[in-house]
Length: 91
Image 1 (cartoon, rainbow, N blue to C red):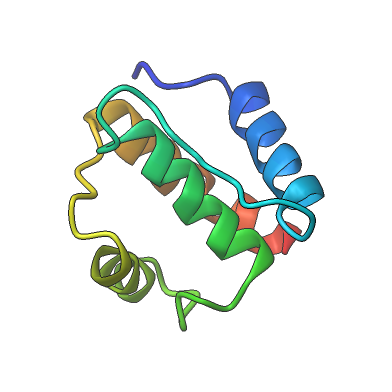
Image 2 (image 1 turned 30 degrees about the vertical axis):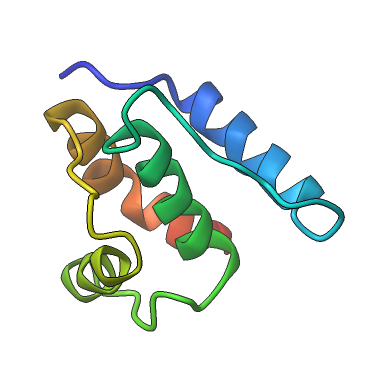
């Protein structure tokens, strides 16, 4: 399994949380299909109820309604799946 390091995700989530009330926050990567939307998904899971569900399948469906191009590469899909409970509990 090859995915983004947890410290990078956690740092990004912290930066978003610190600044989102003060500024508009842009989360981006090269193509906007995998890394950045996965970070946005985890932010919504951890800090909001925007996904309407804590169940992974239902929350992913809700996120895809918000951001239809979401197409995580295997590494990011695995990261989200393996760390779902961690980010759910942190919120």
